[in-house]
Image (cartoon, rainbow, N blue to C red; front, side, top):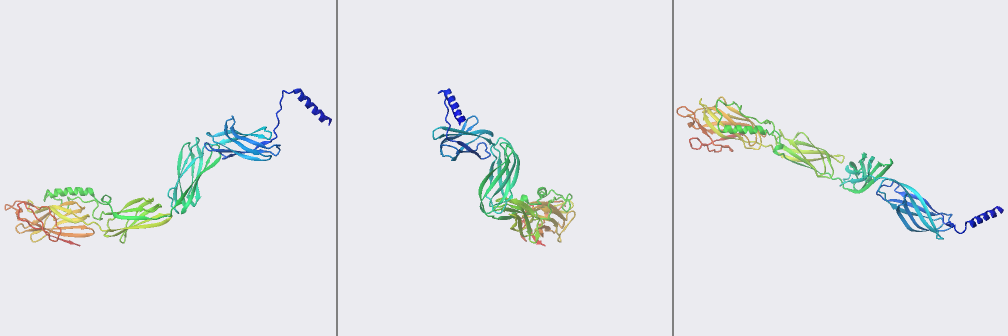
Length: 536
C-alpha cells in the first residue's frame, strides 16, 4: 500500500514539474482494426478491374462505438487509388467489408496499403493502416471462336484464334473444347509459344448433338511469373439435323475432253485431201494401196467419245472419298476418283467410252458421310456417234499408158469417226481394176474431215459408160459397204490416141439412187451417179 501511494506521489510530482506547457493526447476509447484484406481476382492482370476488400472491425475490447468516415486504398508513395466515404457506424464487436476498385496499367509487384479513418463517441479520430502487396500480370491470351452453321452428329470444324496482347512471350499453351451437347472428336491442341502481339489459329473438330448447346474453349498457359493459369470463352450454337443429298449429272463430255481425237493427223490429212482434189496425183507416182494417206493416231478401235459426270454435294455435311463407278449395260468401266466435297461444292470427272456400244450408261457414286456409306446414281442414254462417208471432188483422166485414173476425196459428213476406209474399183464387162491402185486404203477419217484417194482401172473406152467404185468402212461397230457408179465420158480418149480428162463437180449421194449433175470439160449433157449401200 505504501509503494502504490509513493508511485502516485512521484507521478504527481513529475506532472507538476512539467507545468502547463505540455499537452497529453487522449487515448481513444475505440479499438479499430482491419481484420482482413482480399484481392479479386487473385491473379490480377493489366487493364482489368481489381477489387480489394477490406474488413473493418470494432473489436470487443473497445469502450465506444465508432463511425467509419472513410476507407481508402493508396500506393506506397501515398497516391490514392480509390476511397469510400461515410461508411456507417460499428458497435462494439461489429465488422463490415468495404470494396475498393482500381486498375493497373503495367505488370509487376505493387506495394499498397489500406487506410481507415473513424471517430469514437467522444469524436476522437481513429486511423488504422494495413499494408498489402499485389502482383499484377500482363493481359491473358485472348480467344476468338468460329463455329458457323454446325451440323448434328458429324464432325464439325471449330476455328479458335489465340492472340497474345501482352508484351511478353506466352508459352506452353494448351487448348481444349468442351460444352453442352458437344461430343469431342479431336478437341485438344497445343501452342508451344506465342510471341508478344502475335496470334495463331487452331482448327479442332467436335461432334455436336441436334438442337441448342454451348461450346467452351479453355486455354491453359504459363504466366510471366511461371504459374499456370487459364482463360476461356463460351458461345452458344444450334446444330441442324444432318441432311444428306448428293446429285449426279451425266452428259456428253465437251469435245476438248474426249480421247483419241488425233487432231494433228486430221489437219494434215485435210491438206492432202485438198491436193487430191486438184488432181495432182499421177498414175505412176501413186503410193499404192493408201501409201500417201496419213492416219489418225487413235485408230478405229474406240469411239473416242466420253461422258462428263458431275457430282454435287447439295447436303449440309462434307462427303468424303467419293468415287464414280460407271457401267455400260453389262460392262463395268474404269472407276474415277472424285475425293471430298464440302457442302455446295461440285466436281466433274470424265469417263471414256472407247469400245462402248449403244447402251444406258449408269454412273454410281459411292462416298462416306457422317461415318457411314452412301451412294447416288445418274444415267445417260448413250448412242455412239456414227460417221457417214461421201465421195466428192472426183476427177477422171487417162494416163499415158491408156489406163483410167480416178482421184477424189472421201469426206465424213457424220458426227463420228469412221475407220478401215477402203476405196476400190469395181468391175463390169467394160471396166476392171488395174495395177498399181486397184484399191486404196484411206484408214481413219474423223467427223467433218476428208482424205484423198486415187484408183486405176482398165476401160473399154469404145463401149464403157460407167465406172463402178466400192466404198467400205466401219462406224459405230458396223461395217458399211457402198457401191458408187461414176459416169464415163468416151471423149477422154482422142482419135489420135492421146489422153484427156473430165472433172466431176463436187457431189454427194444420200439415197439408193440419187441424181448428181456432172460437169464435163466439153459441157456434155448431164449424167447420173448411182450408189447402193449395204451393211454387214
